Amino acid sequence: MMTDQNPFDAMMKMSQDWAKSMNVDMDTFTPKGFEAMWPTMPAEAMEMFFGNTMNPEGLDAKTRLLLTLAGLTVLGAQAEAQIRLTIRHLVEAGAKKQEIAEAIAQMGMFAGVPAVTKAMELATDVLEKDDST
Image (cartoon, rainbow, N blue to C red; front, side, top):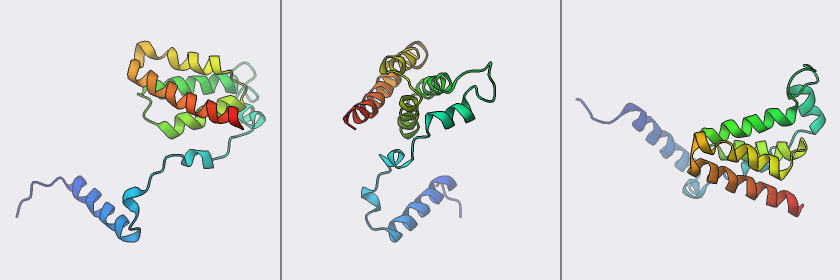
């Protein structure tokens, strides 16, 4: 017997049904905010692993993180947890609010207004939380 159901859709439904059977509150579950549980790497460690410690003539960690933020923005600012974590790391690496905003705004020509707006909202949320601590 042939079926018109997409095998991927069937697999996803089966997985969702299984997850719901394990946790009846699964409909209300959201991973939003999980990135806050991930610790921010100390600036010195970021510089050692991602900066110019190993490559003295290369980019520093803050510049690399600004590029990462720009890349996440140009992709449509869909990776919310990654954007939030990158901004937290940028703050730790010594980036100023203005530098973070400029990295996002620079992507306006490539990503469009909706992506830049979303990234700015995420950045504002993270930076406001950082100010309150």
